[in-house]
Structure formats: C-alpha cells, structure tokens
Image 1 (cartoon, rainbow, N blue to C red):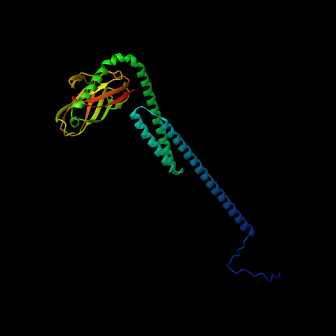
Image 2: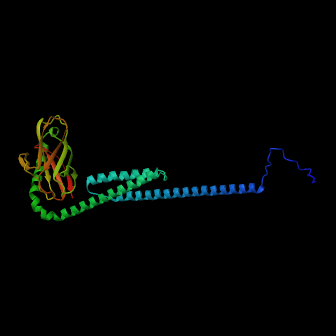
Image 3: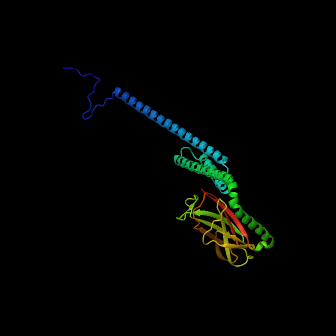
Length: 306
C-alpha cells in the first residue's frame, strides 16, 4: 500500500482547486500592451491628421485672403470719367474691404464661412469684369463720338444753337425772376425700359424712356397748373419726339420738347414721372435729358445705351 505524502492534504469535499497559469497572465499583459500601443498609434494618427487638416485649412484661408487683397488692388486701379460708375466702384471697394476684415476675423476651421467668402469673392470678380466692360465700352464710344464730331457738327448745329439760346434765356431770366419763386427740381433720373417694363441698357431692347424727378416745396412759387417738359437729345444731337411732343413757350421763344406732363402744384413737394414713348429705334450712345418749365431750367441728366 502506497504512502500519501505528508504535505498533501485532500481538498475539502465540494470545492474545486483553481490554479493560475503564469503563461496566460503574461499573454494577457502582452495583448493589453499591444492594444494600448495600437490605440496610441491611432490617436497619434488622428492628431497628425487633424493638425494636417488645420494646416491645409489655414493655407486655404491664407490663399483666399491673398486673392481678395489682389482683387482689392484691381478695384483700386479702376477709374472712370462717369460719376455713376465711380459711385458703384466705391460701393464695391467697400464690400471688398469688409470681406477682407471678415475673413481675417474668421477661424480657418470654419469651413462654412470660408466657402461663403469664396462665393462672395467670385461674385465681386464678376462685378469687376462687368465694370471693365462698361468702362471699355464707354471709352470706345467716346473715342468714336470724338472722331465723328467733325462730320456730325453740321447736323447738330441747329440743336446747339437752340441749346445756346436756351441757356442764354435761362441766364437772362435768372437775373429777372426772384430766386425764391422759381420751382426747383432735384433727383432727376432717366432710364430706358423694354416692353416688359424692365430697366435696360441696350438700345435694341429699349422702347421708352422714363424721366423721374422731385419738385421741391416752395410756398413762394405760383400755385396752380404747371407743365413740366423734358428734352431728350440722342447721341447725334437730335431731339427725340413723337406725336404727343409739345412746343414750350420759353422766355419769349419756342423750344421743341420731347414729352411733358401737367400737375396741380400747391407749394408742396411733388414726385413725378414723365414717359417718352413711340420714338422708333434707339441709337447706341449717350443720351442727355433736360427738365424745364416755361419759367426755368430745373436740371439735366445723362444715361447710356449700349
């Protein structure tokens, strides 16, 4: 019969002996170390990718800023002899300056804002190209008008004579008529319209001309019916007329006008408009519009048809 070793005690009934394998423990530690290393690598990759993305976005912002600053320089280099275009240029220059300020105050990671600024840059570029086209067209037209001036001088001599006489009469009346009693017109504006009632700048689309103005309030002026006349002169110096055109008895003489409208003036400010219809085809060039009553020349304006 075998002897049982003294140092070995039988396990109590119902209990199971649990043994720990050192190899298993070491394997678990290795796996955890590998997982931690992988996570560290993933985190590092994410941080590197984020830093790279931020760097790229900052590069996009810097490039966009450079483009806008270059566009600002292009706007500053544009110039025109026409007040209306200069006014529009000033407005666009202000928009460019505000865009530069906004992008400088925007984080490069704000992709929605950066994309918005890119679209605004494209719009401002398109507007500048349109300005260049307008300025070139006006310069070309002016050169042509200058070149044709000698040939057109004979045809426009009568119109110039009438204008000189009109101006002379206005000067004479200015010395005779009390300044406070003369009707004053302001905000004079003339535009061409098409058949759909839209403002156009092309001669081929124009069918009528609308002149708008405001008669200022004047308690010293004579109350009652007042007829306001417009004289529209085309690029060749001809006065545009239709079957409704009237003769204006001006300063003891008679002046052909293009259109007119009578209002009941009672000393208060009056906004009014005068249409010129049915004059046939419109020529390309600069049109001059004079506004007057039988007592005074209230002002003039110009517009161009391409």
